[in-house]
Image 1 (tube, rainbow, N blue to C red):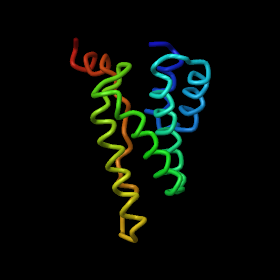
Image 2: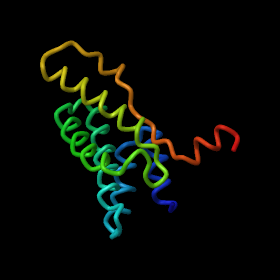
Image 3: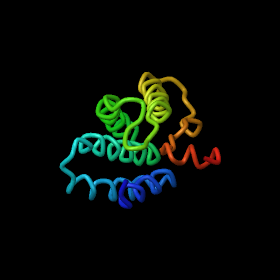
Image 4: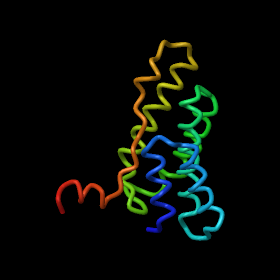
Length: 128
């Protein structure tokens, strides 16, 4: 895994979504492998949460929906990222956004924002 990808992940996990988007987009522009669609999905997740934190809820919902459609096809783990929990958290956010659109009272500050967990981070935290 290259350093630019890892920097993008660190920015995302630090909730610096605009910066994560910039870093991953730079990588995506030059990338021509099977991961290109996956990288685009991660960029859309970062943009979606950038919109979410700035209360552009329509933009957040649009980007997160597009991102899930791209990322879900990569299975439970891809490029070292544990996707099941990541996607579960995104879907919970999408559910909250849909409830807001229906006019329900939702406390958006309680909506969890995912962390990107790399397989080797899990092993490192377990002492392996």
